[in-house]
Image (tube, rainbow, N blue to C red; front, top):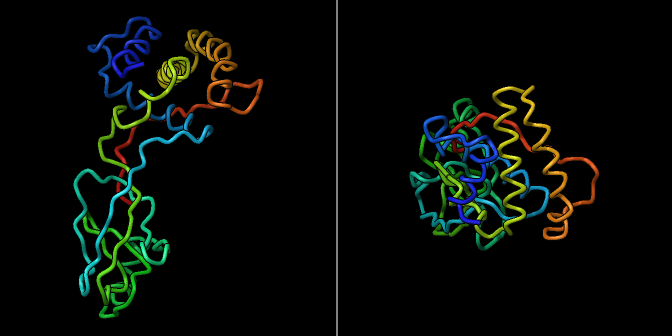
Amino acid sequence: MTLTEFRGLVRTLLGGLTQKDEPDAVLDRFARDCLTAFASETDTDTEFQTMALEFLDGKRDYALPPYVSSIHRIELTDDNVSLEFVSQKELERDGDNYLGDTEGTPSQYSLIGRTLFVMPTPDSDTTATMVYSRAGMTLEYTNLDQLPDAVASYVAHGTARDYLLSKNPQDPRVAGLVMKMQERRPVVHRLIKLPVSTHQPRLKVTHWRQPTAR
């Protein structure tokens, strides 16, 4: 199922909701939440991406590319050691300790605005791998197009359900969507090997917030 087909299915499930009624970007946010929840319970990869970093001798600050929204992990290549995150609040409280003249192998990192700081300041050139999420991510950055149609349909029903719940928790259409998801669950279970359960899995109901780097 392509992204265009997926969006069309969601709109059909919502009674022919038009772009004027609700733009794609809004529905995509609900879909992304559902797909992320689905991926979490099935170990299906979603939007996490990796980037190679090079820390230079004597340089502690590095500008992040504009498309990086959230940093999940930074791991030194040689030692396979993950750097510890230090919050900006801790930096403001103990700035002299963290951003002083100490040099060595980086063991911590922090973010101030769009700048990545590593501590202590590198005393030699070294490389690392950063696991991150992209800013302004839409469904094109997920594996939706790699899912079987039956699974994509399952996620589309969850997207429609969560959208309706956000507008009116008492909407009578919600029960019908839940029933359809329950009917599709055995097929999805066979395709993705979901845990066997008689209960409908809880898909997150949330309002979109632009992710921030942390």
